[in-house]
Image 1 (cartoon, rainbow over the protein chains, first blue to last red):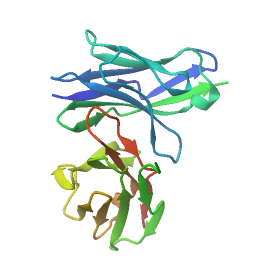
Image 2: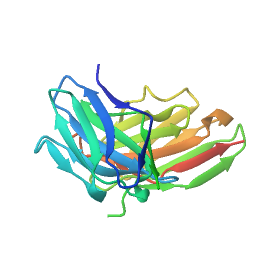
Image 3: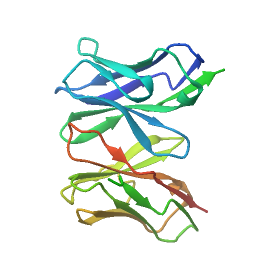
Amino acid sequence: AQSVTQLGSHVSVSEGALVLLRCNYSSSVPPYLFWYVQYPNQGLQLLLKYTSAATLVKGINGFEAEFKKSETSFHLTKPSAHMSDAAEYFCAGSLTGNQFYFGTGTSLTVIP
Amino acid sequence: DAGVIQSPRHEVTEMGQEVTLRCKPISGHDYLFWYRQTMMRGLELLIYFNNNVPIDDSGMPEDRFSAKMPNASFSTLKIQPSEPRDSAVYFCASTPGRRAPLHFGNGTRLTVT
């Protein structure tokens, strides 16, 4: 079955600490993977995308993600958290056909 | 490019009333998706269109919900009659294809009293 799974519905980090948000996928075809961020009362904004060109993908606001086929993972990282990073983060995949699968989201809290 | 445009931004209505949500996708995007977001259920796909044709409407909750895409630049999601449990944020998104990301509108926050 095709799916995208985010581990951890809530993550808290201290300002300046590493941010790691986990995402795993299940797909019978090569996936196209995306990370989105949602700030309160706003729509989802694209952070970065993996479309098979390079396994390490850099996005906006200092975020990056690495596609690991052997682990079926696409974890999102940022070396140093900023207060403005507090938001909801969604991992999504275009796994088969033209269907987009979304994870359940991870709420990131940044502690000053 | 103005992005995906949704209207209205907020809608408050009474139970039993008809509600129509509107979406204008990005020009050239052949796929349009309607999602619903609530605290309890998260982000749910309701329906998606390809070249104005509904492809998968299995996420539409019940017959009270209907969606149309009369042309490439406009889609509507209608709820008739509305119920309090329909209260949610409804998002429209478009994309040129599966290799490209979805572009989301700012959503319509629906409150049914």
